Length: 101
Image (cartoon, rainbow, N blue to C red):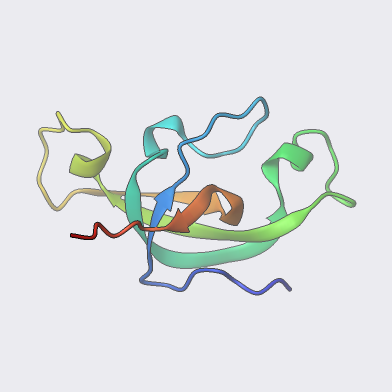
């Protein structure tokens, strides 16, 4: 098993990148910051899985990340406490960038 880069409770930002392949990383989450809430089993990365490389594909950890819906959609009209959780592979996450003065 690979060493996990993030811990439950860590604030992470989803990379704002494009891909030619299937990634499972929703576009609406890219560039947004949320909190790691759960670990998922290490699995073949979606780009390899899409090509049927389940046995010999590259594996990495996956995480469940919780986002406030108001952070995902600025025009969201629901409650401020509404959240959405989605699964992200480790390659799509980076530590939250903290603003410095």
